[in-house]
Amino acid sequence: MHVHIIADGDACQVLNDVFHRTELRTWVTRNSIEIHAYDVTEDLPHLDRLLNFTFSEAHSRDPTFTVEATNAGFSIGAYFRLIANHFIPPYVKHLLYMDTDVVIMANLGQIFQYIMANPDALFHWGRDMCSGFVVFNALRMDEIWKLSALSPLENISRTDETAVADQLLLIAINATYPHEVALLEYGWDMHVASKWIYYDTLVEKIPDVGMLHFNGGRDGFAYWTNHNFISGYPDTWRNGNYSASLPWSWARYRAKTMIRPGQVGHKINITLWGTAQRHDRRPFPVGI
Image 1 (cartoon, rainbow, N blue to C red):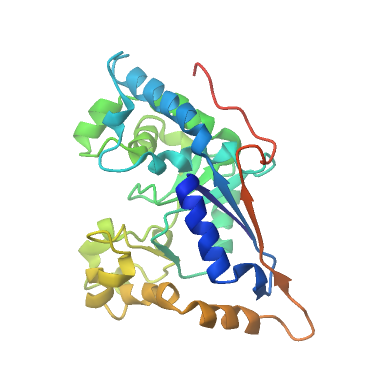
Image 2 (cartoon, rainbow, N blue to C red; image 1 turned 180 degrees about the vertical axis):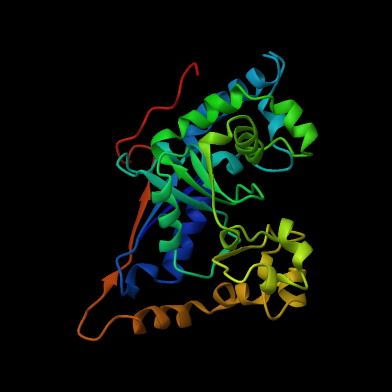
């Protein structure tokens, strides 16, 4: 398994501190795990220009449009997922993006069965259209910027009451070019923001659950510390708290005990990529 983390310089420093504190590089697991963290600080001007171009094109080519208008309360980091193809290895064909408040509840192999059923789709996501859990076609990701720029973003934002942020770009493509998008099953579309309506019949409505997305915490705290779905629904949503609250030392031992008898396992391989030390990169789109 390969895990790719895109962050700015400050976040990369925090990540490195976590890797040292938990001694994650010494952990041994049954299967090979590689973690790659990318410092994209020097690429932020490219992203700024891309955002300005995309939204100004969609907003009637308004030359006064500024990137500040696109944050909707989010940092520019919300858009990192949409440029991931410029940092991961160029041979990667599909990329599963998930927010940090997503908990995996089943084998991810099921996801790739959906992908193989429609491998050319621009992206796969759920019917609730949440950008917190999306499978991107890495070879086509630059088309997201082109197609969203050609979509009526302003009208879609107003009609769907969707904030101007990264999710709006994907929703616009879903609405304007539905043939480019494939859907995941309900069990891989479990977002608190939309599934709260099933609070008392969740198991009956959706018996097969692959992930849980808590859509952020409150007041600056991580979701597992105070989310009302954690405390209020012990038979369903609270199960997502297990992995998040597990002590690091216990998680390390759990990983070690999963190694099959007679096998030695694999040490976790962690690489922090600076600006000048990267995989061969795809160039940023220019003049979409």
